Length: 251
Image 1 (cartoon, helix red, strand yellow):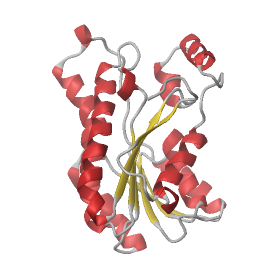
Image 2 (cartoon, one colour; image 1 turned 135 degrees about the vertical axis):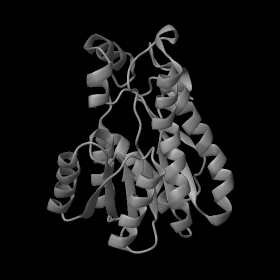
Image 3 (cartoon, helix red, strand yellow; image 1 turned 90 degrees about the horizontal axis):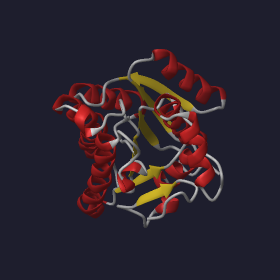
Image 4 (cartoon, helix red, strand yellow; image 1 turned 30 degrees about the vertical axis):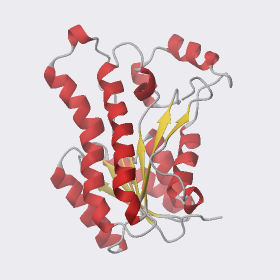
């Protein structure tokens, strides 16, 4: 069943890992997808090709979502390709950057992480909302770290993801009267290059073993949740931060 048939969706950071899985899932559900990428045209093109090979519709658009001009270009490209209305926005851009304890963090690093995770969400939301119609949906990607403070050296990342969750709640109140919903997804240990880069294998194994399901999550499982929140099947949900962590932590 194509629950998003005819919808137009933007996925920021949509060319790798969870972002790519979300882009492919939304397209498989019938949406016309705009895959935003930053550094790698190859990743953007590969995601579009995978979507098109499966019978879906997508374009790739470069842009740094921490820059207002790039956000504007992304929106303009979306409207040029698919018309004036935008139905779905998935704010997936973000990252840890590096693990640094308080003594090693400086102001520049802290503000960079906040800009990457929070400012990007603010800018894209502010830019897209004027083009959203009745019944549209925004899904933000936060993290279990936003609830529990994260692992060693992840204070800036955890704080930024906590801010994304709070921004989601505030926007639910503000956008609700216009029937625009906004929800947040909080992944735990998901098997992606994020953890390939920042988490030791032994730590990953220990965390996976501590979950009731005894494993890491998959990017496709996060994408399934995002697609549900983007669809009318979740029409009475807004302002929520939904955990997807295999039972590792409860909220």
